[in-house]
Image (cartoon, rainbow, N blue to C red; front, side, top):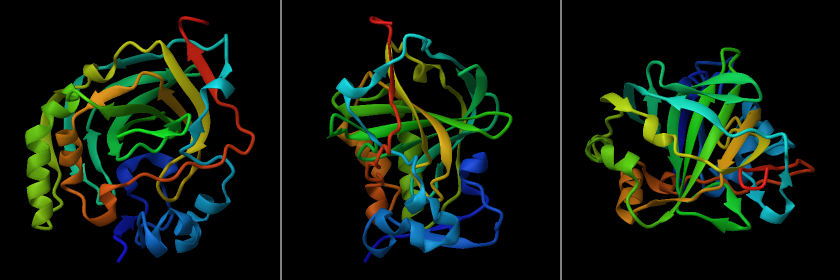
Amino acid sequence: MAAWVAFYLGFALGLGNIFASSVEADTVQFGYSGSLGPDHWGSLSPLFETCSTGKSQSPVNIVKDEADRNKNSKPLTRYYQATQATLVNNGFNVAVNYESDAGWLIVEGKNYSLVQMHWHTPSEHTIDGERYALEAHLVHKSTEADITVVSILFQYGDADPVLTRLQESLKRLAEESAQDVQAPISLGVIDTSPLRRKTRKYYRYVGSGTTPPCSENVIWTVLGKVRTISKEQVAALHAPLKGDFQHNSRPTQPLNGRKIELYNKLKN
């Protein structure tokens, strides 16, 4: 039987128009397999129609040799700092919600504030058809409620220092989930600056959210540097989730003529 989650429309992580709905009281079930899986999202609710009809959907497969090198692209300009945060089990993913000014990212001259980080296993984006062990999404929101996401891909190897700091909180989240408790866990003040490593290469394109309602006009920045994560850390992210939500990656979507731009510091 397919796993499912009650998706609370209008709340949906508080991330503005990418996840917003005008019908706050409704709930819709979706999953990652069977009749509730990604192939059927668009028919689960009229509010999810874009998941099947949208022409600029995410994630995508990035073909290195086909990416357009944009000589006018700039290095990533971002600043992250210590702030209050909570760890939450959304049912379909595990996330860190930042409660105050966690920092910012500038994309095409616009300032976006860091509001959330969550994970997908395995990765949603692929590079030359390769799917990685994990993908982190750093979600940023502008004052106009526009969304941009920084994607970090992970392969198995050494432990990730960011998740190492969350180890005990993830264990507690899993214990509460086993008891059907969904209360957020306070992380206190956490330093987000380790998320900002030097980036000499990234890919950028316009896409969508990767969970229903799959709203479009999201600017994606997929970092070219693949980081490492231990198998134990991936298991710790799986533990609070149930059923097929432990493997919560949407299949790649057609580009439909979209261009993927490449910034490479060594060649720009």
